[in-house]
Length: 231
Image (cartoon, rainbow, N blue to C red):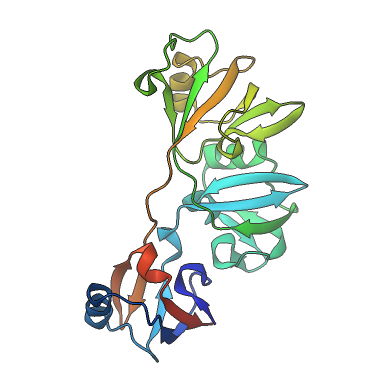
């Protein structure tokens, strides 16, 4: 038995209990959705945003849509649960996606471990030599929660999305399609430039999309923690 929030995506689940600390509004919402003890439901995999992998000893954070393109054995990466280990059998997607995966070290035959479905917030960074010169947060560059930018941090290459606030490093690789690479270049995000993570916004509560009786419903993260299911 586990909280719905941490249950495996894309497979049938059965509700085995609800928290006794459920507020009246939450109880009404679940009743409206038909989520009660004994109900069967399924979490929509594409509604989760990030997947943290370990590949050849290196951590890689993927956006969820990118993760869905990776086939492990007969399953999509997004159908697997934290702790799952496997070998990449195939990668879907076009040329740009294939090149991005290859640059990240993801190709057919690579061994990987799915570590977690985390939720990272947006980062604000300062880049050396850019026009950004003040401490005002409005003058700092904003990056999405998942950015495929690699940085040398004290001799170790790390994806910028996994850097901690206050960490500094030097861009080593800009993994992006042509149009986005040009945008990064205009913002002084280019190989060799120094970067510092100044601030990270805490992510908002991440909801789940669940399917109950052939209908989709969005369940907030707080409410999802109070629904207990078994696979």
